[in-house]
Every structure is written in C-alpha cells, then in structure tokens.
Amino acid sequence: MGHELQYLLETKRFVWLVAVVFALFMMFQYFEFPNGHVVSSLFSAREGQIVMNTTRFHASNTSNISSLHSHTSHALSPISPTVLPPNSPSLPPPTAVNTINNPTIHSSPNTSVKEFKDLQKNPVHSDKSSTNEGVSPGNVVTISEMHDMLVHNRASSFSMKPRWSLSVDQELQDAKFQIENAHFNENDPELHPPLFVNVSQFKRSYELMEKILKVYIYKEGSKPIFHQPQAVLKGIYASEGWFMKHMKASPHFVTKNPKQAHLFYLPFSSRMLEEKVYVPDSHTHKNIIQYLKNYLDLIVGKYNFWNRTGGSDHFFVACHDWTPSITKKHMDTCIRAMCNSDVKNEGFKIGKDVALPETLVSSSKNPLREFGGKPASQRTTLAFFAGRMHGPVRPILLKHWENKDPEMKIFGKLPKSKHNRNYIEHMKSSKYCICAKGYEVNSPRVVEAILYDCVPIIISDNFVPPFFEVLNWESFAVFVKEKDIPDLKNILVSIPETRYLVMQERVKKVQQHFFWHVNPVKYDIFHMILHSVWYNRVFRVNL
Ligand SMILES: *[C@@H]1O[C@H](CO)[C@@H](O)[C@H](O)[C@H]1NC(C)=O
Ligand SMILES: *[C@@H]1O[C@H](CO)[C@@H](O)[C@H](O)[C@H]1NC(C)=O
Ligand SMILES: *[C@@H]1O[C@H](CO)[C@@H](O)[C@H](O)[C@H]1NC(C)=O
Ligand SMILES: *[C@@H]1O[C@H](CO)[C@@H](O)[C@H](O)[C@H]1NC(C)=O
Ligand SMILES: *[C@@H]1O[C@H](CO)[C@@H](O)[C@H](O)[C@H]1NC(C)=O
Image (cartoon, rainbow, N blue to C red):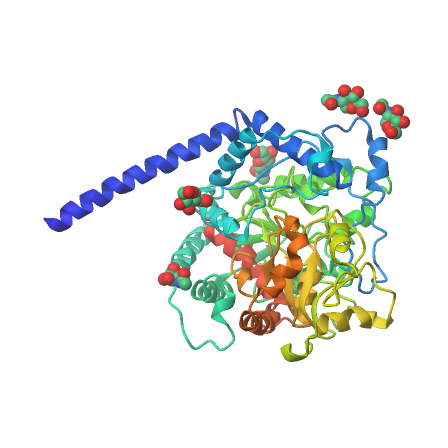
C-alpha cells in the first residue's frame, strides 16, 4: 500500500516534471523558431558589437566585400609561434561568407532563454565604444554549462530514425545500454579516474568500440583532397592527416561491407580544400562549399547509406579553421570532428560534433618528437605565453602582462631559435602555460602545454576542449574568462600549491591521450578521436 502510494506520488511528480520540461522546451522553440528573427537579430547585434572591436567581422551583408578586405587581410589562422612547418599555408583570410547569416547560438534551452532575457534587460547597442577592449561581455558558456548542454542534447536531439533498420542499429542501442550501466573495474592501471567525466562509462564504451565498431570508408573522391593523408602530416592541421592515415590502415575497424558499418567516413582534408579549391584573395568559400556538395551529391546518389539515416552515421575529421563554415550548409547532420570547436559562434553542436585536438607536428616520420619537462619543484616561471598578435585577446593579454611582472613571462612572437628551443624551454619550466585564443578558439598550445607537463590556462571563451565528452578538463586545466585577463595573476596565485601539484600530475597522466604514434596504440589520440565519434553516435541512436 505504502509502496503504491509512493509510486503514485512519484509518478505524479514525474508527470509534472515532464510537463515543466515540455513547457520550457516549447518556450525555447517559440524563441528559437517563429520569432527566431528577433532572437537572432539581438544576438547578431551583440556579435556585431564584439566584432567591430576585434577585426573578425560578422558581416550581415556581403554586398561590399572589398570594404571587408582591409580587415581580413590580417586574419591569418592561429599559428603557434613554434616552427612554421615547411608546408605551412600562406593562409588566406577567412572570408565574409564565414559568418554571414550565421549568428547561430547553440545552447541549451535554459541558456538561450536566459540569454534572451538578459538581452531584453540590457538591450545591446551597437555602440562600439561601450565594449571592454574588444572582449565580449558576459554570456560566456562555462564548462559546466557545456556539460548541461551535453546532457540536454543527449536527451533531446537524437539522430534521424533510420528509414529502414539494419542489425547495426540494434548493436548501437545495446552498446548504449551497456555504457549507461557500466561498473568500474578498479584494476585498469592505464586509466586515471579523476581525468574522466565518468571513467566507468569511458572504459566500457572504449571496450565496446574495440569489440564491435566497423567503419566504412567511401572510395569516391580524388587525391589530393581525398585519400591522401601524407599531404597533411605536418603543421598545425596535422590531426586530420594523421587520423586519415591511421583510419585507412586499421583493418580492425574498417569494413568493406557497408551493411555492417556503424559509421561512414568522408575522407577529405580541409587543408587540401584550401590549397586546391580556394581561389586566393577571392574571400569566398562558395566554391569549396560547392565542391563538397558535388561530392556529397555523388555519394548520396550512388548509394543509399546517407539517405538511410539522413547522414547521422557519417563523419569527417577536419582541422582547418574554415571547417565549420564550409560544412555547415550540406554536412550539418553528420558528426563533424573539428578543431574549431566554438560552441557559440561557429555552430559546433555539443553531443553531435567532436572537438578535435589541434596538434602541431613538425616531422611526418616522427610525430611525437619530444615531451615532458622539468619537475614541478623546478618550474620557476609562474606563467608563460608567446605568440603572434592574432585575434582580439592576445593584445589585451600583452597590454596587461608584458614586462609587468617578473613571474609572468608574457611575450609577443619570440625571436627565432633552432627547433624553437626557446619556446619549448619556457613551456618546460613554467607552472602554467597560457593558451590564449587567436582568431579562432582553438590553438595548438593546449596540447603543447600538456606534452610539456605544463598546466594549461585556457583563455578562449566558448571553446569546447578536445574529447570534452569524456575528459574532465577542469581536473587538470584552468579556464579563465577573457574578461578576467587583468586578474590573471591573482587567479593563478590563488590556486593552492597542493592543487597545482595535483593538476600537474594529472597533466602527465592525460598526455597519453594526446600522443600521435607512427603505429597507433591503445588510448592514444587516434583512438580517442575515433572513440569520441563513436560515443556521440551511440548516444544519439534512435530506433
Ligand atoms: C549592404 O551594404 C550596402 C553597401 O555596403 C548597402 O547599400 C545595403 O543597403 C546593405 N544591405 C543590407 C541588407 O544591409
Ligand atoms: C565598398 O568599400 C570600398 C572601400 O571602403 C568603397 O570604396 C566602395 O565605395 C564601397 N562600395 C559600396 C558599393 O559600398
Ligand atoms: C535548467 O535549469 C534548471 C533550473 O535552473 C536546472 O535544474 C537544469 O539542470 C538546467 N538544465 C539545463 C539543460 O541546463
Ligand atoms: C558513472 O556511470 C555509471 C553508470 O552509468 C554510474 O553508475 C556511476 O554512478 C557514474 N559515476 C559517476 C562518478 O558519475
Ligand atoms: C536519397 O534521397 C534523395 C532525396 O531525398 C534522392 O534524390 C536520392 O536519389 C536518394 N538516393 C538514393 C540512392 O535513393
């Protein structure tokens, strides 16, 4: 009796909760769609304001491309101050097309509604002088909000129901059930639990990936844009090349039978698209977008795999800054592993897309040339940064901290040194390495800091860090909002030494997940990338 009553009460509470959630959802839909215009114009007004001050333009109007030119000509991609790889692109600027009509804000209903309200309370004027030195005021998506978004998106945004079913659908469904009911096996010495959001789920998911995952690689597409990983094994976009190389050489995961595939890989290089399809100085991505569309039309017309799931079991891995904008129109339904993982301005979808680590590789023979650094006790510099003045944030960092404090080694571009020894030595002997965004949120510094045992300080609002689904970033890195740059030293010295020591130990333990090996090994970066794609596929399964 008592049990029944409790059950009844709980059911009632549950129904009530569902109703509330539904109401919130409808409210969100209302703001997002029918009145979406209002919301997006408010957001674009705000973005416009940020942009004016930052030389990155979010133009609302393409009709005068030439007037944008003067802005774009500085707009090189963020390049690490470390060795400029020989094949380093003379990067043409991102173009106006980049952001036109895309003031997309991907946030949970809560955040959107909240932001909408904030905006109503504080209407944004496009008066540029009112912003804080080009840094966006407020409304930064924190890591914990990103986790909320992940939970929310998992519960609400499933992939398309397959038009007809195959046994792989059931396999994914079973995998999801097993992951959700995972129990931690204490004796896996290779995994350090505090590094993970949930190590039991990660471990189970990884085991299942190794056991069942099959990937079909399309044969269509010509070299060097498709199927030629060796073209991009060096430089700041090397992640896409190394991934492609390893994926193609993984008989364990690759299947020739598409009916057995849980995932379909579109093996193109975003770097090669830039080199071969982009017309220098054209300031438009139109022909790249068209090139990818032609490719997609080809495979959609030739096979029915894309049609079966609306693309939700397809994925690509691409590191160029332009990837979000060149794939937004026609490839938005597939799983996009991208270095440019900006949750607010670039349409990165948490729970579907994958934050790809940007890694600077200087040797195509030996991707992991060196790692490690001084022990914690010998790290004499509190904080280190060096780099070119790309984007709006770095000049502010320098303005506040260059030559201001002997403990803060904050520089512009360092003078050239052989193999960039100077830069690397700083990373190896500093407690904290500042990873300040360039023009885009991502920077190879995040992985560099980790490789040199330096605790990363990430100053890049709305950046979704790599392997966000599984790694508990706040256990080994510190996220500082752009607006808090003036307080940077206070923030760092207020971290207790014991906490620093714990974080630094964890940085060393998380390293293995960021190593490129000539031959992939368990839990390395190749497997982590593939795992995040798999994990997002599994959690969005829809039967
Ligand atoms: C776009 O800009 C041009 C000139 O730069 C202007 O004449 C036109 O009205 C603008 N269009 C819109 C829709 O803002
Ligand atoms: C575009 O901008 C350029 C440079 O600012 C200016 O000379 C030109 O008149 C503008 N064209 C239009 C159509 O507004
Ligand atoms: C939304 O807000 C409620 C209450 O403020 C909170 O309990 C819930 O976790 C939030 N959900 C998301 C997805 O942010
Ligand atoms: C991890 O996930 C498992 C399975 O869903 C769950 O039982 C466990 O409580 C979770 N652990 C943490 C720390 O959230
Ligand atoms: C997939 O769907 C599209 C449009 O819905 C159609 O044009 C195309 O022919 C379909 N492909 C196959 C192989 O059925």
